[in-house]
Length: 347
Image (cartoon, rainbow, N blue to C red; front, side, top):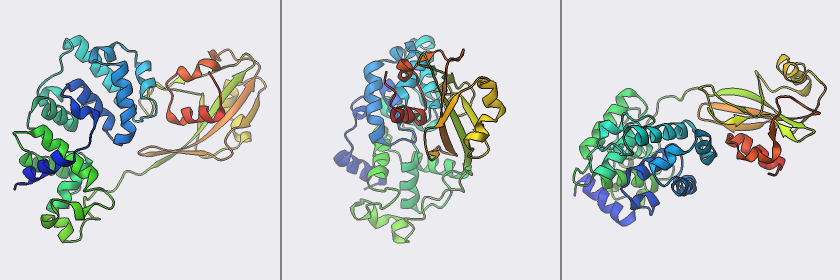
């Protein structure tokens, strides 16, 4: 039995019961694949149902505001995915008359869609034999064939794509792609793979040569940058505050946050109130207290954010226009959403 036949045979008996597996609608497949990027299935499930309920077609998503989409996405992380999703939905609805492209290379032209997602949509929805290669696929192929090329190198990316393309079952490409992803997620797991239950254990190079923990190989990670955030949580006597939208191209673009003073290290109250940024914002007298006794560490892929929330009580402030009772309607980073829960401000 060939590799692809054995894999698909396993899949048909053991595949996960996932809602997006019950459709070939490219909109739903696209939505699920974007959500699943760097995110666990369990976390995605509730968001998928929420999006498909509120935006049942690509036109519904296109007609929503970006702020609404970001709010719906809140907590799922990697917010550029949501912005690109919304941009592409508008393009499909307005420029393509709501018709999703049917060929791999046409799908690849859409903003926010790369080789993996385009391959998944093309194979699952339109039976085009284009192989998907994600973390699960890299792991299965690297271990089974004993490949030591770094999966995040340009040479490795090309090598694994070509291998997966050569292995794909052209008569059922969607099943093959979903099979190898499920196999990596359920059997050939990153830690403690279930080698005793593996259909390929007798011919797996990594198992025979004791390379399971060494494969796949990854080049050295990008150095993590430490950043130190000081959020100014303003409370006026008429119960209003300030939220600013992040418009730069960095993290959390389009989301809202409290006024931010970024420092080079953890700072104390005296250092905060004597800074030029603080004085420019609050020339008049304020009452200030630190909400969290220890800085909150929020980890992103290449950044660690050490955050302090400073409660600023002031009689009035011209820029404070947002009533606290509606603050939960704004899309904010999960870091601030968690703070709001702990701070117990109610609508």
